[in-house]
Length: 307
Image (cartoon, rainbow, N blue to C red; front, side):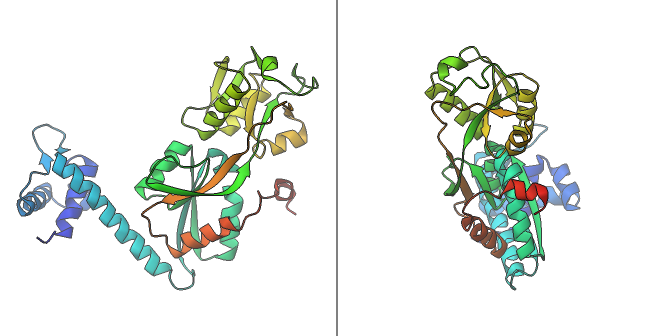
C-alpha cells in the first residue's frame, strides 16, 4: 500500500485546524477539494479517519494515530531540509533554542550571543518559558535544543548535565532576619515565602529545600517568573529562594540581601535537552558543542560593564 503524502498533508491540516473549511483556508484550497482528498485517503486506507457527526470534526482513533505519525513524518522532512541547507560550513541557516525561565533569562542570551559571533550567518531565535512549556516546545519540534534547570522527566527527551546553579535565600534590605546569623527552618516559621508559579522547576526546588529545613506548607505568595519574584521580595512581600545568578545585580547594588542559611540549598543541575529521536541540524550540533565547552556561567559583572 502506498500512502499519498499530499493527501496526508491535507488530512493533517484538517486535524490541526479542527475543520475542513479552516484547513481549506490555510491551504488555499476549496472546502470540497479538501473534503474529497481526505475521503480518498480514507478509501485508500479502508478506515474512517474523521468523525463528521458533529459541527466540529474530530479524528477517530485511527485518525488520531495517523495524525501523530503524519506530524512526525513532516517534522522529520523539515529537519532534513534544514540540515541540507546548513551543511555548507554553517554559513546560513536558522537556530531555535529554548530555555527554562531562569536559564533562558540569565544564561541563554550570553550563549546565543557567543554562538552568533562564531556563526554570524545563522539566524538565531530564543524561546523562554517554564520547564513544562519548554518540554512541549521540544516535543512539538518547534525548539531543537534547550537549556533547562533540572533533568527532563519526559521519556521522549534526553538531557545531559552541563552546569550547576546555586539557590540562595534573599530578602529586602532591613528584614528582621538580616544580620541574625545563619537562618534555620525554625527561624523561617511563620515567614511568608514567595514561590515561583506551579510548573516551574524552581518551584519544585523551593518546596523540596524548604521541606528539608522543616518548613512545610508555609504562608506563601506565587510569582510568575524570577523578575516578578524579585520585585515581590523587594516590596516586602516575603523572602524567597532564587538562583544566585538571577539576583546577582540586586545583591551587588544592595536592592536585595542574601540571608545565609545553616543548611545551604543543594545545587541544582543545568541540563542540555533535546528530543530523543531528533536528528540535530549542523547549527543545533554546533550550539550543543558550545554549551558543552562551558566551565561556568558567564561573568555577569563583565557583561554589565561591557568589559
